[in-house]
Image 1 (tube, rainbow, N blue to C red):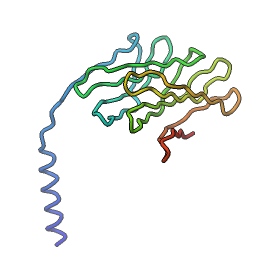
Image 2: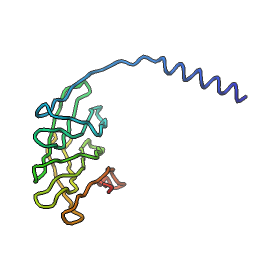
Image 3: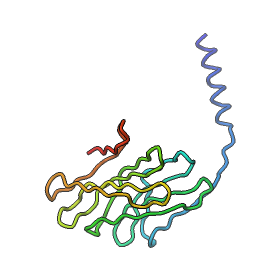
Image 4: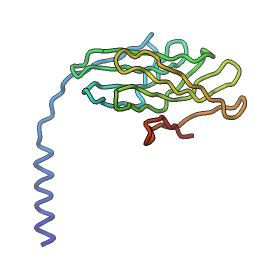
Length: 159
């Protein structure tokens, strides 16, 4: 019986691997300059839009968030350069049920070195709804390693 079940599962797996995959669209993000661009997180919202977030180098690294339509055209694109205008590195992203985008990462402060930064962008136009910065240990580097929405739909980052 086990042998028959194993054979059936193998045949089903072979059939699945023969499924045709078609490429819908390809887009390249070149950023503000020809510096380095690195995607970190991606998600699909309730309307089928694709959101990608990462780090993009202009003079220094900044957070970048881009929302694409299901056909691959850019709906909006946003950059975040923290108050210290130095390197900022995105580490996490989540979407809520309305399609709003939350990102977090470490961001250089004016006098506090790296701080924890969390930003909320509006689903429809990418408008920055709020920025929250947190300096846990005075003048030491603070970095979140990810984020999620809790049961009350509030953002939670982990350190």
